[in-house]
Image 1: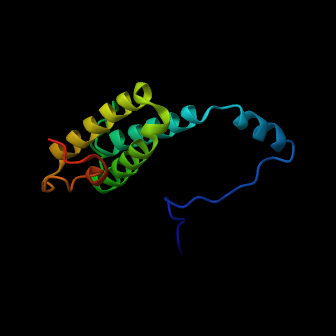
Image 2 (image 1 turned 135 degrees about the vertical axis):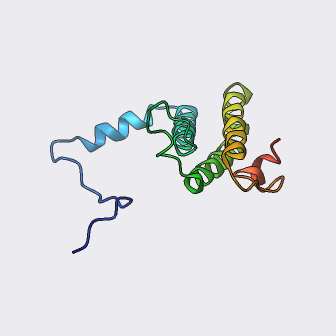
Length: 128
């Protein structure tokens, strides 16, 4: 007997009563900067949890450095690519958060990465 993969997602269409055109209008009113920063914050939050930095009692059980590496790298790519578009007022705090996660990863990792080889460092440069 097989069990469903916990990492899989099954797409379920929206309810028939949902007005798709209204949803499209709603998203069209959201500024790009808000979409970008929201995505970055979600990546930051997920990476923090995977680094074991969650506030819950089971934070250590949630730690997964391989997953954290992927999330931090994706965040670094997003922040680096978006910085010219969103301006320093918004990019600065995102860069600070990214750097904090990169440093936390270095602290948590049992086998340190070479300088410039840590998560996201191909986009940000070496983090010390």
